[in-house]
Image: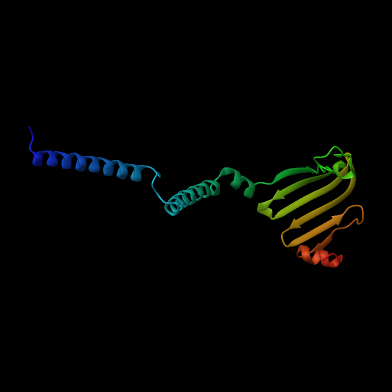
Length: 170
């Protein structure tokens, strides 16, 4: 039979061994997971990770062929937009039959960044028929706007504010 002193020693060693094992598990979990970390520590950790990812993405995007192509070669683009307006939404009297839903905007453009040229042909359409048209041109230091239905010539200025001042909009 074990003496009382030996039983205490064994019990103390078992308790100490359990504490060492629990401490080792806690340290491993703390270092390898986010389980016991505070919100502030986690915020800083993932903020740093996200900012590194954003920097990597920015360097990738800065060097893409697509961006170089846009900067060096002329290109055309088209934008079409329409509005879907509903009156009394969510009721039994819901109504989408209004003149706003019949309108569309179509913008055709030509851009040549290497020659500092930008042109936009803006059309307002109602049921696919042209209601109004405006043209915008930017070439080097000159800007021009022409409302096709009102003027045959462009209103030209060094900036957009100057043009709108001439027609008393600004």
